[in-house]
Amino acid sequence: MVGRTLIRGGLVITASDELHADVLIEDGRIAALAASGTPAAEAFAAERTIDATGKYVIPGGVDAHTHMELPFGGTFASDTFETGTRAAAWGGTTTIVDFAVQSVGHSLREGLDAWHAKAEGNCAIDYGFHMIVSDVNQDTLKEMDLLVEEGVTSFKQFMAYPGVFYSDDGQILRAMQRSAENGGLIMMHAENGIAIDVLVEQALARGETDPRYHGEVRKALLEAEATHRAIRLAQVAGAPLYVVHVSAMEAVAELARARDEGLPVFGETCPQYLFLSTDNLAEPDFEGSKYVCSTPLRPKEHQAKLWQGLRTNDLQVVSTDHCPFCFVGQKELGRGDFSKIPNGLPGVENRMDLLHQAVVDGHISRRRWIEIACATPARMFGMYPKKGTIAPGADADIVIYDPHAEQVMSAETHHMNVDYSAYEGKRTTGRVETVLSRGEAVITEREYTGRAGHGVYTPRSTCQYLN
Image (cartoon, rainbow, N blue to C red):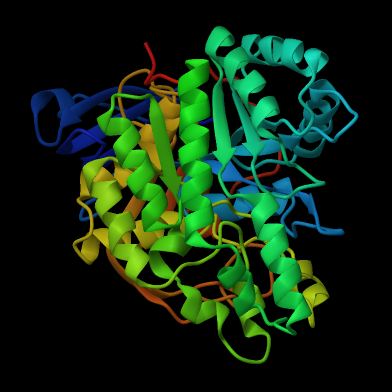
């Protein structure tokens, strides 16, 4: 471990402030901040100094929705915890919260232990876990209490994927009632999977097999209906609710209505819904399969409503739902049958840059960028102010960000273990230069200087937006 590190001359941006300040780091934490050029700052002394003049100094990103090594559709997500967390660091993300999976017939503990085994000793950055609950029963409900106590404080349920992860309304209600008691947060994949399966079957019977039909059968109204139902079930249970990967304007409207009623309901969207659309799903020669994810990409007119939701705080978080499958050999499993295309997109490396581009384009402010990508996910999932901000006592998870550098996103230059980029050829302004994780340099002036095993498991407290 290096002794003290000093970051001089940068513009420090947090969710609440922008200040030209020097940042002193000691023992992996932020020891002090002082306005640049003041006597207090001049008095800082350190073994290592990083010159951040002309750059932003921002908290490391917190990506609260990733799926490393996820088994899905007869294959596995192509990023391991090692490759996925390294790519995250390249993109300025210093903490991920991944999803441990309970298989039907097995305990939550078995699922959690399996994910600990995958991640331990392999991660370049810090990580936590949510728990996917696929099998609600009396034993599972008791286990939820134990997991909350040990720092796994959020539980994901699915209204989609019958026969795999699906929970019916009764199972959902029971889990929500339990979370109302134990302080956990239910995360919901809100799509009416039973109805969608009917539409899939009918589309395939009509010979509609191309990737674009994936978007057409997973209708926006069925996302909105499930979102409404999840909100009302949570209201009955007296529980908070976090709706993941919101893609449709009709679903945003349901969240906004619930929040206007004062309900503890939160929403997340992802870069793919802000920057991509059904135009990508319709790309010829099976290229559209690269963009198959659920919830699906929507027509472009939904994007404006998602940006508006982020500005009005009806949506609070942007995560990636990073779940990559290679085009060759994985996405191709669905040639001739869109329902067999593994669902998921790569994106853990792109999120911070895409959201900075949104600042450049005028969709959001700089502070809102940090809020939706760093501070709010850290608060939502019980890691703030250890993660998500730059303040004395916080972990020294810091990114030196060059707001003027230009780059072109491409599979040739990204570090995710996947053979295509969802943003191939996209030009963006802004780029990560140096990344510190707990004071250790993981990326040093565009070189990887991290190591597998530096990242440690991070237990979490309960959602910090709830009284």
